[in-house]
Image (cartoon, rainbow, N blue to C red; front, side):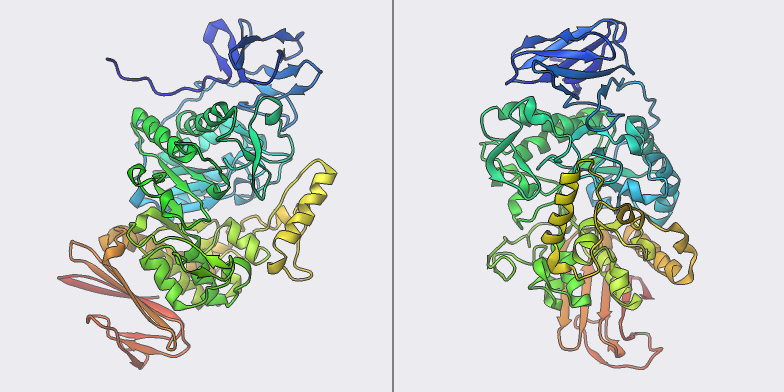
Length: 603
């Protein structure tokens, strides 16, 4: 029996060489459908089960096409590879094999080696394109980053959007550079030794230009999401919907050589099937990666604190490779800023930081004051490298502080402690673009909807959703161009001394993390944290079977403290500046050693 061929996309427009192009669309509830190809008269499509199918011998890449309904509606392809004229315009035939890749030897990066850097392509550079982002890869490589995580890039209405309003899940946004732009970017990342993780949205589809329901039962009213109609994963007609989403995951892996997916807000994915869509997607994704000879990962964002997201199938889990750990952010941010409104309520103690480091979920079955109920499960026994931690990301910057970054909310000394905690924790670290040099520009929420009523509703809804975090005069209308322009990264800051010092700290910590097994082994069972809430210090010790050891001492107080770091216990007393084991006020000190060596690095 021969080896199974890797998966290939069979829906949408598929070039057949000198035989033309095959057009295929899933439309189970449609009685008849025609193909509107360029400026030709409509061509009737053939019913094939739940699909409509047509081969056009003289069609070719570059042609535009749409689907024509009986009542005269003209709609783009749900599996369009390119929407050059926006979400309402025609689709365009793309040859998926035309791009010449040079990453033949690329096999991906191990999960435990991921040091992630989250990027919004539109604001990463002044030009806001895939092409303009490529020159920045040298900076990321020199910093020590191993994976670029792109916020969603599917076609969305207008030219300004976070990406979570995408409606064409298969079409890289034309304003960013379209399919060739994304492929060129991924190819350049691989040449630089960087993996690419793509943020994908399978819990909802944006409101403008969303024509999926006209083709089939893509949505259900059985469940509710905060962002739009829930996607139909378990009701009548859901087989085709599940295929559409799994095909999308495999499409990015196969045609774009993407190294992993970040699944947005899986708590908005509802499925009571015997085999959950997330389990099926994860398995199919790994099978395809193996067939392609590459390592690739599925990372979930979940608001559930549910270990089933990470547990193996035999334990009833979805077997995701890793999950975002929002509560690491909540614990560190709330302790340093004192802000504890909305979902930050209930945090603010060193004990919460300790628990995020040693256990993972802070809420692991206890009472949540924000949710007003007992919440979560214990993730203590799961390795640290199953979690992605951060001190800020796109959501946390824009949602909790009107766009202000963490370095604007606390002193630079406190910011450096937060950085050191992140890089020394047993979790996988994620940086948000510009964080590495304490970017001063905000990151705001922005949209560019063409429908005036929708635009107004989005602006009003945004205000209402985050009014607990918003003060009078702080709110910036998402529809304004100002919100977008103010969010662009100011790269010139790296040359200023204070910002360069932060960059150097990040660089040094990343290099230490890569070099010392005790800092990157993900072994929570070899991690010990002690703290004193009154004296405001925290000590984290990391071990490794090789014998190397690291001790991080964080002094959050304003007085100098002396740490006896080499012993099994930590003792603090008033110290003298200059002593080798003195940790000055509001600073951190990292000590690393093997049985035969010792180095100390004060932060």
